[in-house]
Length: 346
Image 1 (cartoon, rainbow, N blue to C red):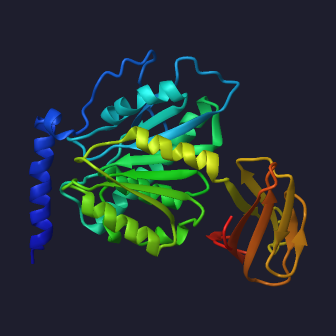
Image 2: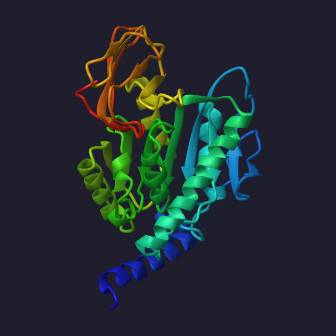
Image 3: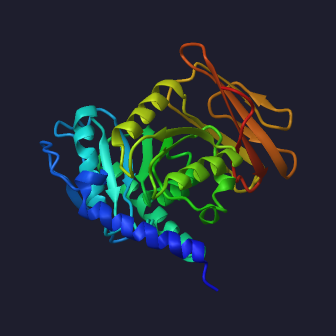
């Protein structure tokens, strides 16, 4: 039995997308352009997957300093592309001195959207490609671990939500710009949501393609406990790189980045866990609680649990200005599958 509402929506989206492609000056749809930056946009073959991505680094790149990395996800193929997306970003990358990466993706069709099972496979494939591209870029450039961001426009919203929410330890923040959304594409992602990872969702008040989907995305993220900032912007279906960049700037200025990791270094003692931290600042003091009554004031403590169980491990770290930042994870021992939990305001 055909889903008439879904098919009708696809038909409308298809013809509106064609209109965007034919009448860019009237509709404001993004078009490929020569941004007149001094450096070259490079098309690179990622060796492990054999798939391509585009990258741009500032012309005066200096290996001795660390750079932010912004990964941009393009929309529906045929109406958008990685090459077009990076063209919208390179001038800003040169001006603000960050590196921008645009992978070629498959699971970003916002017009004739596949069924959930097929879409999930495409999203998983894109996830592996995005992560591989980031590793490839980090091998050649000095990237700041606490300033890696993911953003996407239109159909690229699928990739941002699937990959960005699934890797909060990698992406400082994510931004969906007038993106497509369907809740049944992200059922398995909810368990990985970090309540401290900033998520920005911009949707258009006059966007007949994805405006309502953006609102549904915000509602779903709130239900999952994500740290959502929403912005209803005027105008048609259009990319907004400067808006996404300003959000990332605010995150760096105002939201401390602190992550807990755990490893088992002693094969003969599976209940012994060594904890580490990744932070955007140099903590002055540490205060660990391990969920079984144990505590530690050192940066990377080792703790041995008495029995297998699930424990809430928390860390309070003091920033150089005296502000205390708290993070917590729920961790089954000895499996060590860390699920972030919120312990109150930070």
